[in-house]
Image (cartoon, rainbow, N blue to C red):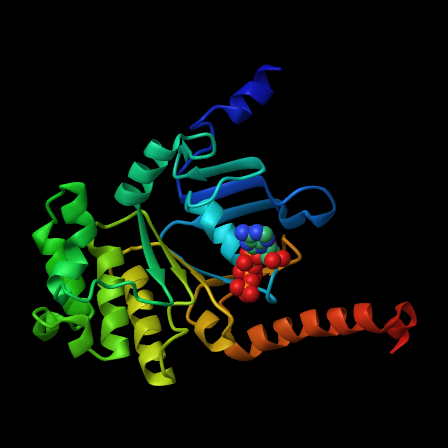
Length: 270
Ligand SMILES: Nc1ncnc2c1ncn2[C@@H]1O[C@H](COP(=O)(O)OP(=O)(O)OP(=O)(O)O)[C@@H](O)[C@H]1O
């Protein structure tokens, strides 16, 4: 049918206000009896210019969702768009270019190059791509992150929080459409973690960036605009304007369901 064809045509989904979108996103690892359904027909819209947190119990599919949305992993079924570009079905070379040009990444391990100073680390992805940074933007990022007097330092001469700020600046440097952060505060003490969350918040509020962050920490999720909760490979809930308390309460409900499931069916009476 023509409508079905239109629905599946790349670019058919309006990009306005939506930085990334998934429909029927399914990811299975392995096959046969050992197959694991990491994502089960997930529909999700990531709003542009907002800070989205992804939470859920261990193994619920958070990292898999991030990897599939970022084109780091192939999908088993369904579709993913970055803006109005359908990325499912792109060849590895096209995906590499898309990631390089349109997505920024921050990981728990900062992934900085030890022999390069902060300034060189920040612009490395752009240097590799042969692209000139927008100096005005770069200055704004460096000042927002308070890195001006650290630019000549190597990672070993920086604290953990400063290293993560450099990783944050690197993710922002090319002004990507979307930044994916996987447990960006996982390796930091609480003060440095708060600092990095504050900077991600500023990147959204002052620089207009879009951020998606996977986290286990309700306090970290409270810095976001909206939290998506995953359970067993599905988006089971969302929370606007989250507080740490509300997120913690919501997470506890996963534990209750799990313990009821593990005890016995009649545990539902409790
Ligand atoms: N490469 C893989 N091969 C096989 N199974 C995998 C692979 N990667 C993930 N899985 C499985 O897929 C499911 C979802 O994993 P995923 O890492 O996305 O969860 P998560 O919510 O990010 O977990 P955590 O909070 O522990 O990091 C899990 O059951 C996991 O064991």
